[in-house]
Image (cartoon, rainbow over the protein chains, first blue to last red):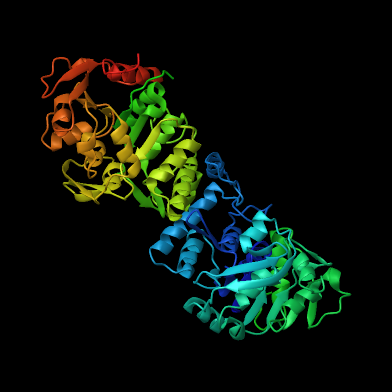
Length: 306
Length: 306
């Protein structure tokens, strides 16, 4: 790990966010705070499942499945098979090792710990050196209106394999800043918005009461759209169905008011953009790419490493 | 399965009870109702764990581990290993497949089903043909006083490996008869007390309000003590520490007032017993032994099979 004095806040969703978080954590160590979307969280068999938090924790710990980008490497599904035997339809892929995280979290929440505290315990146990904060302690829920009506996020994303066109988004709950998040925002000097879905990963975070106006500036956003396509998930389809250009420019418009600079992929040099921009190789295929992208993003900012 | 018109209620704990239940179920099919101890039930990571119910269900479904007598055959423990990675001490052996039962039950209870209904769903899903009823819908808890003080049952049984001498027993909760159990007791013509621990398996059942006086007669009890030893678990040690003879006679005294005939092992023919007795080969080493013991127990009673 390289020494740096710069404290950075990274807003992140799942797979793309966790990959950039990994690169930045290796540069910044405990000076990095990853603020993770919890709008996808849901209850399942009495467990509290936090898909983005877990993806970030597993990726940062090195325990994650590098191919899928989520879940644990070498995962087994014997519990899920037994649930099928009981007549259940296994729409959510619940791994045996992953279950341990959900069980541990359930128990800790039942004992009165806040999600922020639970997450901090988990990241320490898993050997994650940077800070990982849920965007809020209170349960919140992203809902999407599709041509099939309003759906919970997991219904849309997992059950319907994010195929229905999204017409509108709504956020249930009135999340506020946790003390830990407020402190991290006060201490940090730079904000990075990860290449995560603007609508269902970043906007839920930016909606947390008091968060957007406290984000340390400059605020750099890494486009999740490269050459008109999302690297993962439904970001491109959502831009289209919600009336935005399907490009890095569209991603910038979706995040309007929340960024000072857009970091686009080099393939998009020809794009006309609504804000200041830099062009970098943003596609992260392996851990070296993650570190390199993190280094390049931070380059040029005061006291930045490198 | 042999046809029979006799309806039987079997009171059972875990391993010994489930083995006799298996033999009797093959004789009686849906004319058998197994009433299972829930005094060992406990909450663990937010799940409701019912060790005796699960042992009975797994054994009757043929999915159980024949060597151990409890748990699923071919079970894996990847979740438990992941819990250890999170710093947990795995005192309770939570299998990956077994977790499905606990998760399903948690969800069903959260949706408002009673434990009796949950158990009936599970036994149908697992292909169990006889009826399986928890002794009560309400949570109850057996506690034991040892020289180390009062312990919850699982603390005593699993954490302390049932080593501390038991000086006293207490039962928390005021369980009442479920409608299903009341009906089964009304319809049945014979009661069998399985070779289960009198103190922590059978007496908790007999304590359910209204149950003992409604048990159909005759009430036959199979001794869990053979030649002065318990076939499994701490029954012999408990008889000793609670001041009873360590023999089938002691088991009969522990169940005084609740049995009309004691079925002892042939090895105990020389014993002086406080009640009418029959002597049969009671040790069940394999499924054939179970069926043969069930057949012999029911022999001689009106309309009995065979």
